[in-house]
Amino acid sequence: MLKDGAVWSLGCMSGTSLDGVDAAMVLTNGEDIVRFGKRSFVAYAPSEQMQLRSMLGAWPEDDGVASAAEMVETKHAVLLSKFRNEEIDIIGFHGQTLAHDPHGRGTHQAGDGQVLAELTERMVVWDFRSTDVQLGGEGAPLAPFFHHACARFVDAVDPLVFLNLGGVANVTWVDPTIQSPEIAGACLAFDTGPANAPINDFMQLRFGKPYDEDGAMARSGTVDETIVDRFMSHGYFLRIPPKSLDRDSFTDLADAVCALSAPDAVATLVACSAAAVARGLEHCPRPPKQILVTGGGRHNAAMMAQLRDRCSVPVLPIDDIGLDGDMLEAQAFAYLAVRVARGLPTSCPSTTGVAAAVGGGTISTPAKI
Image (tube, rainbow, N blue to C red):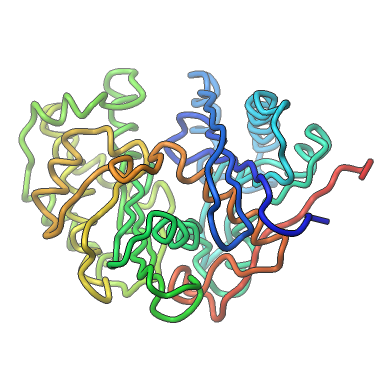
């Protein structure tokens, strides 16, 4: 059982950009953020990235998945060992998403929370997405309730958009004047389109580099607006949110830019992501005061410039208001773990399209407890 009041929760996140694992601590009662704590990161080695990349689209019974899951668990165990001297009441373990098909086979995050519960001798909450999908939701994005808590933590009074630029881009529009995130009108969330995934894949294929550092190559190129316009005619952008994407939902983008020079190709991929975000803002109930950018994509100067050019409201890194844009998703799963343990909802119709507010997640405890 989790003790009453605010507790220290440690969240772990391994995103679709496949760069590594983030871990961060949050002191929370599952509703309010009291304060943030220690954070750390461990990178996947190139061979580990290749292993995960080869498993994208795979399901639990497929060959190679068990080995990939064991690697994910081991990597998390290495990172969690850095917190051995911290006071930790509960752990939120997201796992590594390999496949996401909410209206088909479901969703698949590699990694077993029971393994980490035994290793850490702590309660572990994991498999956050499956219940939402089983009840008709998209299973993503799952950070919106945390974003709502962050807006209240910084004493925001106007609507805000949190834009996460990982492998996929997703937005959360929040009205911080509404106290609970599951109340109608408090949140709207959805995936807008690809973000870093096609850029990283292009850089890896052409140059053996994991990403375009600081957007240097994109900044030296010219955007092919014809390709951007063609990309924006995709049926996904006509769908009313909530809606979600798999990391590889737009693999045809690689074919679209293959005839361009490398700088022009990367610049065009960046512009496609920014154009999709700008289109997504049209779904907001009211215009946000500003867009707060989180995730690795905010370090890409070309991406930030494209967003500012294409969006009609101020765009700034979330770090500018005192939050940690590198650790926000790990912190989100720390927060959500406490909500699951306390029977609070983690998603609702306006964030994932699920029929009613629902709390997902599996709770594992070590055998000795």
